[in-house]
Length: 65
Image (tube, rainbow, N blue to C red):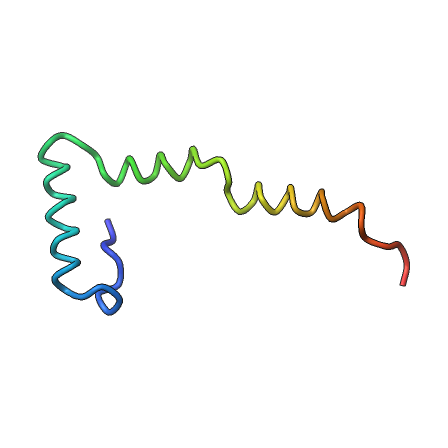
């Protein structure tokens, strides 16, 4: 499981994140699995938003050139 780029957050912040994740694991949680499930159940994925945008814009496009 990635903690993010150290350059952006610093070593201390990365250690704190790691401690939090390990504490959740010790309590029986699955942080990586929960993150994956959240991605799979997201309602506004880029693909869905792009489809809605393109459907909306289709009416305003002109034919020909």
